[in-house]
Length: 131
Image (cartoon, rainbow, N blue to C red; front, side):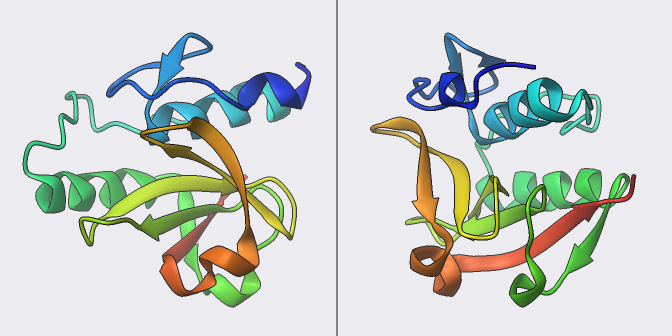
């Protein structure tokens, strides 16, 4: 296990998932790996470049459904994943670290925490891991 604060402030880099840089899938992967000792795939075996963002988000949702169940955003609790609508009207992945905050990536500030109440209108759906 790691100090949770090490997950805050990691710079954004597409298709990365380490403490030097990561994308939205990477920060969620790090959360599960180092706080719950779980390694979820977050990929369908091919790199997701997000060149066609909507198509790649559909791929990401298909991957999520292999190990998680869709849930109503009003039922979110610690450890649940969320797809957050971003500026391009497509989703980014985040994870609830408790019932009040979401860990997610911001392209400018990197990994950060945002209060769930500020994201409520932007959450497209939630996912709860099956195990």
